[in-house]
Image 1 (cartoon, rainbow, N blue to C red):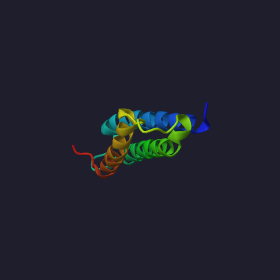
Image 2: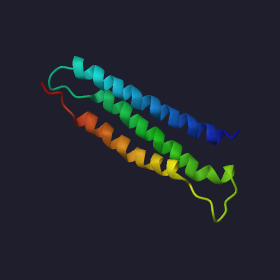
Image 3: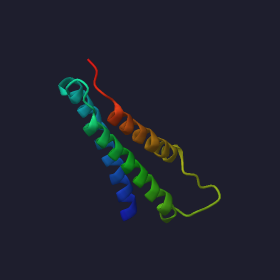
Image 4: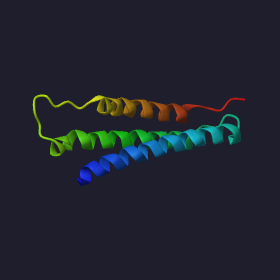
Amino acid sequence: SSEWLQSVQAMMILSIIFSVLSLFLFFCQLFTLTKGGRFYITGVFQILAGLCVMSGAAIFTVRHTDWHQASENTSYGFAYILAWLAFPLALASGIIYVILRKRE
């Protein structure tokens, strides 16, 4: 039970929580926000989700050799690649939410 592995797991879980919260806030703001308003709160939570994914993947990148011995056949796997793909996508989604204005 390494502390760094638990922190990676916590960051990924926080990322999921922030993303789901962002989705629910978007739907709430969609019906309650005034015309021309921006989705600031939704964007902030989505950006936080992206930053949590980035920090979790960065910690895993630095410390993964503590978990298993480094060898020639060691690979990161598809989930690691998905985490690094999720970071810029969540960040871009958050920025788009902040820029987005509500229409009629």
